[in-house]
Amino acid sequence: MTTRSLYLLLLIPLIILSACAILVPKDYLVTHDQLERAWSKSFPLQRELGRGLFNASIATPEVTFLTAQNRISLATNFSVSSLLAGGVKGRIGLSGALRYDATQRALYLQDPNIENLEVDSGSAALGETMRPTLNMMLNEYLRANPLYQFKQDEMRYAGNDIDITKISVVENGIKFDLKAR
Image (cartoon, rainbow, N blue to C red; front, side):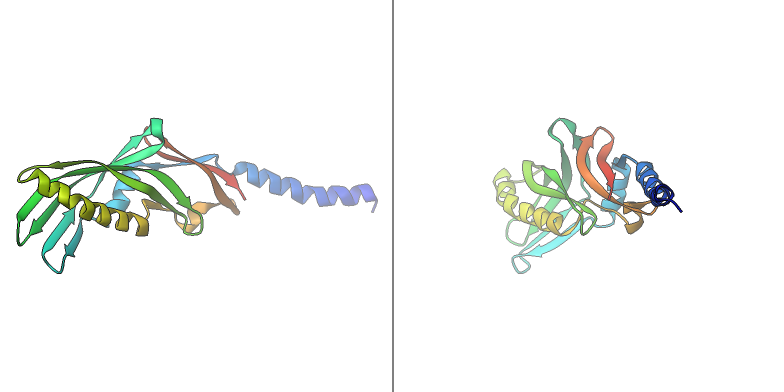
């Protein structure tokens, strides 16, 4: 066997492996429906606070895609009841950037910020006093629970591990740019 034949034999598997890497899709879209299905399993959130003095509930959030800012917005109804001051119901809206954790194959809302707080009835001042409680509940939940978690097989394609190189918020979902490892 000549040296040239040996090089060709070694080159063939490399060409085949390169072809497999080319087959990896360029992107993956997590749709609005996929996010809502994932979230509906965890909500509503219910918390007893202040040794039973307060009960807080947060309904399943509605997701809006803020494409220009590459962020997402969550809006949800809440209720807080108190043995001392009655109850407050309203709506809260927050937004945040997206962060992907490769070890957990999970997408998180990073640095969520309450954008607005509307109180349906009762005291607006009580609603504002509830802002830190609602903020704490949502931040605690969002730190511990991903917006979306990829299954193990979703991060492999044609025998190749896939890395996410970029996350973009688009009109119909969250787009992940992919690259074979």
